[in-house]
Length: 372
Length: 86
Image (cartoon, rainbow over all chains, first blue to last red):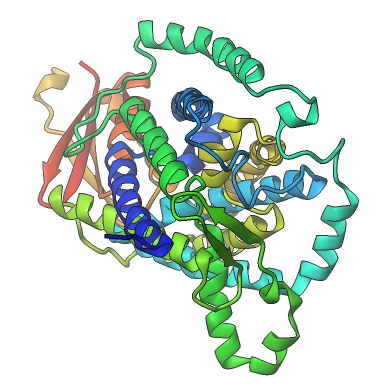
């Protein structure tokens, strides 16, 4: 029996999506909250879990690389570090806080029945597609602001083997992690049905990232799929304008799939290509994972009666986040679960931008959205 | 009169459908608004939520403010009861 690339990739992405969506819903693994609550409530509980996730991923990705299982290293679709990634990260931070969840958090919450997240999802698709309008300008800005030698990862930038910088990063992070484990700061009590401790979720999510890297060829990523969905709609309702947009003709994904040696190509346009094969099943899986978790916990129920202002915030946040995910390019899951563990320069800049963005998002939210 | 004998008035807030951080911010606002009556044991605040995170964040915040908190599972949502600290 022979497998085709899509025959392996599509079921793998679907299963990993269901697993990740289920785990994140059960653990309340909210990355938007992790960055937002640092500023809004001086809480760092979820940021500690994210550090754990990155460190575990660093160890297992590096082990897989040394064992020869990662022929694509760095993985496809990463770009050089630019000021555009930093600005994109900041804008993304604003958007995810206003939307009440990141690009992945929005999906598992949609599955669990959140009407607000469904509105944020529509905003995400609109924002991702609107990027096509500013791409000629923004793409030129990104190319003009490449930092340093423009290499994809820090070890490449400095011309060293990844092992030493990765080992040093892990050792540095191990000190606070060891302290938190011993003082119980990675645990919390919850009466929520079927609660999964976030530290366990962090470890399991790191494993889903590894499986994706091994079987799909890259870590979990989702945002180009939002653009594809929007592009399909735009092509239908405004075909002549759509045809004039160069962004949707690009094919940034182009790699030799390691398991079958097939060349896979794809981009943000509406065609069913490699991006669709990788990301559509993942997107669907994340929604199904949230749905499955909520139904099994007997929590699935849709409540529409929410203050209108919050719907507005969810849509605006989704739109800004969608736009930012194309400006960066990439989303928080792509950069935190995938890029940071291999010290990708673009990912470091994106995450650096998330902090001021999340702060600004929190300020906007408390002043404009939630008030008397 | 001994405060233990007062039957607190129940104030209910239905914040189902709302997500973070709105759930916690609204709870904090209402806890502040009813601060004096809560301390005297005159009122009991009940927040109905379907946000799993709120079942952790609201009790944590209320306990830090010195109140007694319990979380009950009701059908497909949670009821967070905040009252005078013991």
